[in-house]
Length: 301
Image (cartoon, rainbow, N blue to C red; front, side):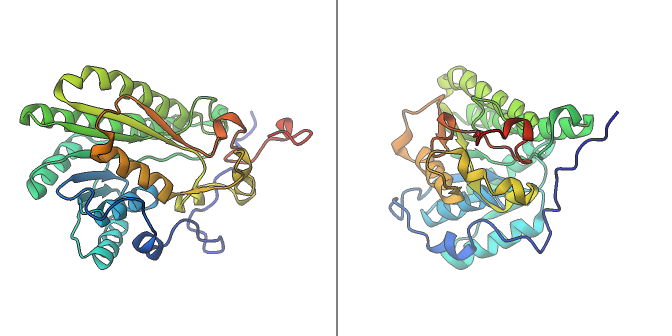
């Protein structure tokens, strides 16, 4: 039996270029929203120490929200907390934990309630995956991605909904997923998990409507963040070619959509999937480990 192909570079390799928005970008980047749009609103954002989660936390704080973030790396959370305080003067809540553990999720949501008195919006952004041909997945690798991206999201959703139901208060859930309509070659594990979250969300948007809980998903396409470090450099060279605009999005593109769904303007949006991909769904396929020769004939997308 042949050995699995190596597809995962070291994400901390200092020789590779830094990708994603800087803290100065996040602090100063223009937004279409008024400064007090989310004043008095509390958002809990998982995976808030980097990438889309960090951008969403920055923007929410700039718009006047109470912000809580969680993630597995306390150093990243601390840096985000300090950066947001320097930019806005606001103190955000942080907690290092894993959403894979339902007891940790329960404690997190309780602690955010204790700090701010309520949670208005949960942003399920935490997740992770790695590029690999599905036939070579280890059992551990498959379970790790499913447990974080599907089960962890579920624990966050259920615990928040139980608290909203008990308190008799409305709730809002925003799940960051992926564009799975045409599949995700070399990322079958996260494709399966994200598809599960999408249809779980559509189901619960109906089931939990009597509690005035809204649930929507955002499916980003090629969004350039620090997370690009898990993909080989040769694969990254063609990521932007997989959409007809032939460019990459950035974390701010997603953060502004999160702010919109958290705002009163989205009060009648429920059970939806909003795709932010530059038209990729109509155009091409991203190969996160590099396009196989089999598909790379005659300039195929």
